[in-house]
Each structure stands twice: as C-alpha cells, then as structure tokens.
Image (cartoon, rainbow, N blue to C red; front, side):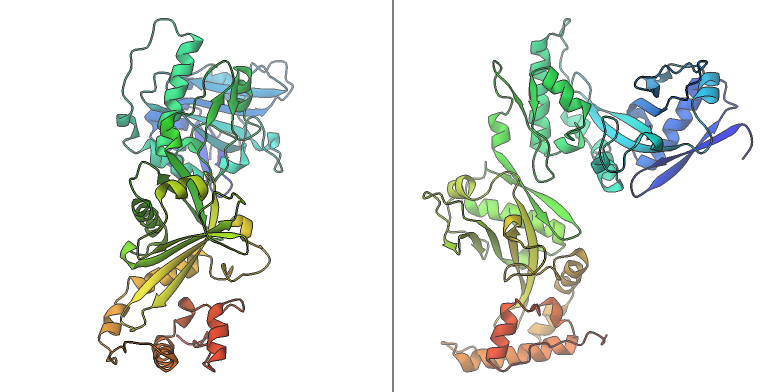
Length: 466
C-alpha cells in the first residue's frame, strides 16, 4: 500500500469488504465512481441503480474541516452522480486509512414510481451503539440475508412492472397521497414492503410520516407493511391489500413467508398454494404432501367453526382437501402476521410401498421454548434435519419399497395386521439406518408410547452406524 491509497472497511453483521481509494484520481467524481463500483461488487446491486451515497463519521473538531457537523456528526453526500466536496477536502479531512463503516442499504422508488433506486448509508463504527438502532443505522437490516433479498429485487424485472405516469407540473400534497397509495398497493401485492421503507422505531421515515400526518404500522417480520392515513384522509389500505394475508413458517434457524391469496375460489385452492410454497421452502415435492395441519390458540369466538381440543383450534388438509369453507378459514382462522413453527413428519404408507409427508405447523403462542410438546419437537425443527428428510424423499427409496414383496391387505385391519406391518417397517428403516427421520424418538412423541404399549423396539437406528 502506498501513500496515494487509503483503505476503509465496509461491513455487515456477517460479512465485509475492503474499499480502496486511489487519491491519484483527478476529481472527486473519479473517487465516487470507484467507491460505487467496489460497493456494488460487494452488494451485488448494479452501480447504475445507486443514486445516493452517504458517509457519516464523528466530527473531529478541526475548524478547518469543511464538513459542517450536525449533532457533531460529519456528513459526506453523493447526489445524482457527484460529490458535494472537492477531492482534496475528502482526502485530507474526511477519510482516514483504516476507517470502519457499517452499511445499510435502502431501496426506494422514484417519485414517479417508474423504477427502483438505491441509497447506501455508511455509518462509522464510533457512531454505532451495538445494543440499539439509531436514526442512521438499523441492526435488523444490516446483514447478508437481508441485503441479498434487496439485490434479488433490484436484479429482477420488477422495474418493467412499474408503468410510467405523467408527473403533474405542480406536485401537491394530494399528489403525494395518490403516489403513496399506489406505492403501498404495489409493495403489498408483491409482499416486499419490508425491503423498501424502514419500519424500525428509530427510522427517520417513521418520524417524517408522523409529521406529515401519516401513521406507520411498524413492520414485524411476520407481517406485510401497511400505512394508514389519519383523518380526514381515507385509509390507504385498499381492498387489494386486504385480499392477501401473510404468515411466517419457521424452523429454529430458517423461515419462509407464505402468502395466502383470498381471491381463490375454494379452500382447496388455498391449500394447494400453501403446499406449493412450503414445498419450495422444504425442498420436498408437493406430490409427497398428504396431510397439512395448522394449530393455533382458540380465540373464544362462538362463531368460530374450527374444532377445539384443549382450547386449540385445528385446520386440517387431508389428501389436499379441506372440509372448511374458504370464508371460514379467512375470517376465523388465519390472521395476517401469524407465525407458525414447522415440524415435518416423514411417514410410510400402511402397505409400505411409498413415503409421504405430514406438515404440522404450530402457532408460536402454543410453543414452550424450553421443552417439546406432542405438537412440536425442538430437536427436529431445524434446516439440517429437514434437509435429510428432503434427501430421502428425493431419493429412489420409494422404488426399493415398491420392489419388496408384501401380503394382500385384509378388508379389516386388526391389531395383528398392524403389528406385522410395524415389525416389517422397523426392519426396513433399521436396514437403511435412517429411522430417526421418520418416527420421532422425542420423549413427548406418540410413536414412543404406542410402540412401548405393543412391546416393540422404540429406538431403531444406530447413531454411530453409517
């Protein structure tokens, strides 16, 4: 490294990139282009999408410093392809070799809603409180997973969806309301509002919206972001927004937002859509899904049509069919923002000729984080375990099963037939040594208690065996 170079570090919570400044450049715009290209390589967002770039660091107290502080914070802004300071000032009074900045990436619409643009905010580490967010830096969005979602949106064909509109010569408050309403419709339709406007309680976006008589509903990870105008304006939430609900399906170390479109004609169409989205998350083919069960606390409403046991409401899909009407599911079961933990039960048919899957999704309000229950096992509710189950489902194990001899199923299945089937099942799973991915061995599992009552082996795999 020579005296014409300065290196700073740009960091997320779980990733970083060193940025090199070559001060042999002739103009500040040359420096700006170099910064943009290096940050774009790190964020995977095209440089032509970057329209704003802001650096913040503590003011050094030097009266010759041309960077005027606000609350003792020095700002360096890049607006629309140019810096607002000379290159010499940037070199001598702003950046120091080894500076360390945390990156927040903000997606925005242009005022005409015809394309996406990006604003990078880089906050010096000395301005960051690791325990709380600030007006300039949000810890919740400063990570690679969140940034990759933003990059995916920017690199998609989302801009082509946005039609161009003629901007009025004079933009009034009414024009702003119309554009804001349309913006909300677009983001709600795609369920990506959380990657645009920050809903952190420390966000200046929230404060400005309050000032403009707009109320922001703070975004929760399980919910679609929505804004509501106070009186005398009309509600910004349109009928289109109410036509969808978003629930979150979680593992202990991963999650997926599931969008339910109430424009569907039947409850079976809703079930098919949920299964397709779950299959994309679990990597298990949808044709393998035979049962789908949701459990959540009973709300006490006498008009609730969902059967309750121990004050728990159940929604069942059997063989991709549901006995409940779509209107009942929409009005009495799901609530926008519901969060469910997923357990995937891998099973064999009674004839032992194929595998199938039962998804059990338990509402977070029914879960004790310290122990398992008959609905949820914490030991199997993780991505590594689910990936093993998906690997079995996508293998040729079913072909092996179909090639095995089997007796003709009797008209009436008695205990003896069940016992014979279960014994043969134990032999097959023990031979492949992956029984742990089928029947749960958790002490709370019904499989353990049933097998014990029939004097059958309760643990049928060897942890040390390949």
